Image 1: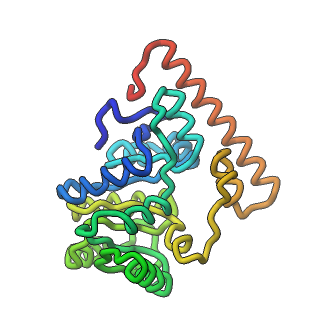
Image 2 (image 1 turned 180 degrees about the horizontal axis):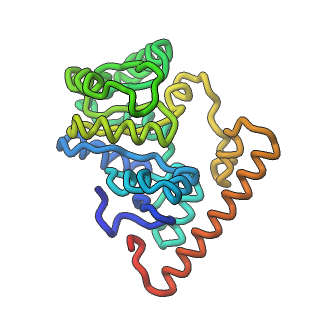
Length: 257
């Protein structure tokens, strides 16, 4: 869990002061040391959700890392004065660790269909000699309905140290918390649509849209009115968080308070 000097507050939660290379180093260190825990790949939607859901806010506070997957969260970090903060996108983090990470650390894929998992394993084993211990496509279920004991045993038997979970937030984060409670030696990272991005079934958000914090608009599959309504609501929340940070700094509050 990050120390007080390594995190900054947005609303009711903290985000880790980090960037892709630093996140990679921290995950590998935790996995090698058997420290374990779960990583929340966080964006504005999840920060807003935590503000309304105390259980999820508590989940984020107990995580190993809350990495900023979204430029608005990065801008908040910069406003706090942390210039080294950079976006840590789930797919890019997974790709980085599998391609250039410590080859002694076995990885495990969890989620999506078996067809997608087979393609994912073939890609990383063949092209990058990644150390993949196994994969499992669980049946679709509510977060409280999974057989966590059996899943944890499969992962433990495989010897995996880093687990990539492809579900939508907040489901993947609640799932990963339950899994690491049973097997505290593994590091679980929820990466949403990363598996299909990796095998080319989904197109990534254009770089310009990412840079201007417009990924959410690009990914939304709703009507234009609903998309614009969501966007302006997000802008309102971001402005509110900005004002909170400015006020906190004016009264000499620390970023972790």
